[in-house]
Length: 348
Image (cartoon, rainbow, N blue to C red; front, side, top):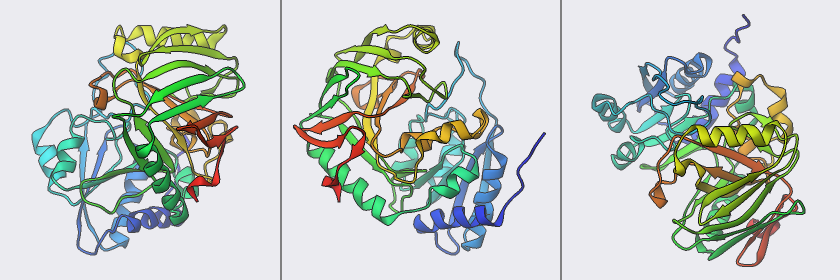
């Protein structure tokens, strides 16, 4: 079995992103992982923190048993902590948590308590370090993501259109918007690496219309480019019809149904990628185990559509799809911010 060795260049990459997280000499840093985490990335995080003069310690948890009827992929909601109070206490007492769990802490149940305690969390996506190496910190990207985040927070409506037939309307009143550029240096915040994404979690009952997933769009839960179009009808947040022929549509119908949970059909978040370093074709370059698809989420100009949990709308479910949709027009209060899959200059 082929196993990657530690490379000096990867230690440098990890040290670069951790330096952006304002790691200080002597700072106590928790490295959170599980038994199925990518061991190479865990080792790289430790070595990078030591290079920066930090004092890292490891929390390694057994990977939890999957209690669900379908495989769990790309949920952003690790169940490794499992509510264990001593683990939550240890993470809360650390000024920085380097999250290397398989699914990540973005939507984990324990994350709110850890952030409330003042910890900052860097979730390093379960990617091959070669992909992380290419997604270097970019101050210009940070500025553009911050500008896009401000624009979404100030918008009343998001409209999405495409030549394939998409006509989707999102009422942005009450939506919660976050921008991620790849690192965090502020207490009580979470970022993930790779970054370059802005997403909004709409309030309940605010998403309506038709979303057409065209050939070449990406179902990241299945880690595949679509071979045929799928038409999703969305009414008051919920996917009410999945029309299309071929294996892509059928797998989606079966996966939705397998949860036996209406909330799995609901919209989780909407937004778009902004990272010019992220490559659309990257999914074809790695074995399935070597990518979590975070780079594809950040591809500049994709409309990032997600179903599943949305805590801001009071919905919780392990069912989840992340789908970058290419070539769309995205408008905020009628102003185009993405045209045919190209982010406009309105964000600098």
